[in-house]
Image 1 (tube, helix red, strand yellow):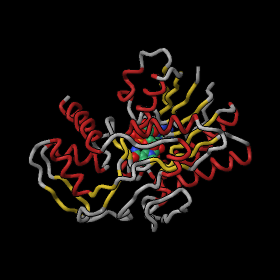
Image 2 (tube, helix red, strand yellow):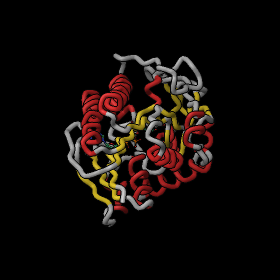
Image 3 (cartoon, protein in one colour):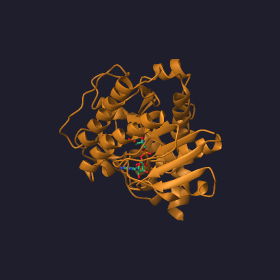
Length: 312
Ligand SMILES: NC(=O)c1ccc[n+]([C@@H]2O[C@H](COP(=O)([O-])OP(=O)(O)OC[C@H]3O[C@@H](n4cnc5c(N)ncnc54)[C@H](O)[C@@H]3O)[C@@H](O)[C@H]2O)c1
């Protein structure tokens, strides 16, 4: 039986990953410091004998008997990672070192949840893995973007220097049930505003585009990347290449949530990229991975989740 550590497993993506790994028959150790995650996200797993949840900060070393590690520990939304930027950098850098040291010691394979933010405010569209990015090291997003870039460097150095088996995954915007209502990300913002009948806030004129991947598709990709041949290290992009403008997204959510929210325009925040879209040819070719859930179907699930949690 595979023994898998999911660091950051009580968060949004991590909780879906833990559920899938348990369904696949693995033994799962979920380590989280609960800064943005919560025990309630993995509540249904707590009674399972193959699941263990521990409170742990990845900035400190961890000893565990495991043979696979998924490192997702890091707050993902700007409102959360900018609240304590120094701690965000420590989580990214010290966390990567501690997880890599554990992988090295245990001879375990390790996957890093990296991000499209390593491309910064990109000058090329779509972004392929060979693009080195356009990142402001001293801006407000630097603690996250540069922290994740440094973590990627560490992964490749541990691979070259110590032969650790690494997988570096660059995740683009992902959404679904168990996102937090207050995380400031556009999908959760719009849904919560629409369900509460508040005004929908659009930053800029609403023409800026994003592409959104449903969490189930991402989890499929994470698991098949982890299983891929050891010489396939990535970095590999995962996300959906289908773009939607913020205005179109607001209208879709308004239709699904019902209600009569108005649209309110606000100035664009500093460093907000105008467009971001992944080139996913590598994931398609190397892993046969393809996002399958349409934006409409994924939004239906997500709206249903928020409708239930907000009324509870
Ligand atoms: N959601 C996205 O669209 C997206 C996009 C790109 C990359 N990612 C990456 O995927 C990972 C998961 O993102 P998410 O959306 O689930 O975010 P999330 O904030 O819901 O989950 C992060 C989890 O890590 C935990 N955590 C934070 N700091 C920790 C620390 N020092 N020690 C232990 N646990 C810690 C949090 O409590 C939380 O449970 C993150 O690394 C994020 O950078 C997410």
